[in-house]
Image (cartoon, rainbow, N blue to C red):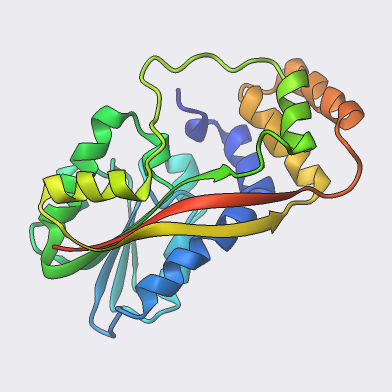
Length: 250
């Protein structure tokens, strides 16, 4: 079972990390919104708990389709007169018919997928977009100051090691996003890096780091939280994030 199908994990994710992630997806939404019209159909692939979905809805499109395979995550999205939530994978034909969308947005989905599935997501995005439609991607936020940041170092030191993924996700730089997109038939408009600093409350950082390391919860999670409380510095961490940004034409 994926951690995103675990109600306890999703509850912690929603409370302690989703609000910060939305501050990052706002960078993508600001780029997308300038291309949204009142008759636009917008598809959010890998919608999660709906942070980016609602940012896109605020731009006034005719319809937003939020695609999220985890029912535990998608129940957090809510409902709306112009909102449709689909429980399927981003590479599924159920996302929509050919040439049906004006914009496809992908916010932090790719790092959740093995490299073997990324190609299918880009091809599906190309399939559902109308000719001249736009694809927007924001991928793989990673701390720039990871090696120097005492919070990250201390968390790695005291938390139990996570199991190795047999088909691990791949960090995708803008140039690599452009290659995947070109292979799917997109014309690159823009591929660059975005940077943002986030101040994260100490409590949110503790809970999110512990739950990532011990997704199953229980006594092991409580021990991880106790170790983090004891070992991490006081105060709220400020972490710098680097993101891959992409825009392409179908």
